[in-house]
Length: 354
Image (cartoon, rainbow, N blue to C red; front, side):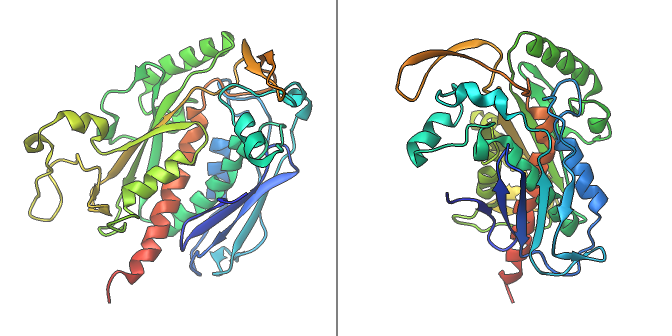
């Protein structure tokens, strides 16, 4: 299986399966001398871990990260940073009913067709549990990037949406509610809705908005490795993601250029930010903001028609512990992938000019 490494200089390679003994990763290319607060790394993992509230999967995993190399006396040494997160609460028997059948909208069928074999326990390598390794690496990338600040939050669940989330300046309420919505009133409505969806044995999708502040001018390469193109690749590599838009996004397609253009101030900043902090594939110093759309979780607690390995029609109903809505736990994952992109481009930018 190829494609387990992300980045060109600041790279992350992940390993492990949902129901294996452990998962983890190796970070390469992180410069020596970066101060790393492992409590911050663990805090980001805690924001992603299962079982943290009544509206997420009740799988109980401590998700404690163990660093094996690359950090000594609180600083990076410049060598590969190896780490592991042990799985402790698997219930593989919850998946025996899908051993020979394919869950609708999961990777089961394509894995069988591509590899001729699959780990059906929780989806194996296709499980979103792999993203725990991304959060570790992203948290380290955040600390390398300081004073760049990356903040994501839930801006929509189903039809419940915040107004103009791209204009948000107060991020103080995000961690005060279990939905991780920046608007407390909307968060309460979202929580109630997610609980009803779970009661119905169903799932619902949503949107995570991310804002990166204090990003220097010049990150990104202007042709194939445009900053927004790489951010799009990073976000679309996250499980359950169905869409990515930055700046004015699809709404910008309805505007005229006279309304859409970002006019300059004398200091090089812009009066508006329809560009989303990126012009010509390169950061312009304004806030970078983008939206990431997540589909409803594919496993639902309702009977559905599907097929087995023989192509015969069968009826399947979801079992086990699953999220009714993935976006509250996706917030730190989006932040992590954004940080990995910006860290990689920051190092690549050292070769931009003499």
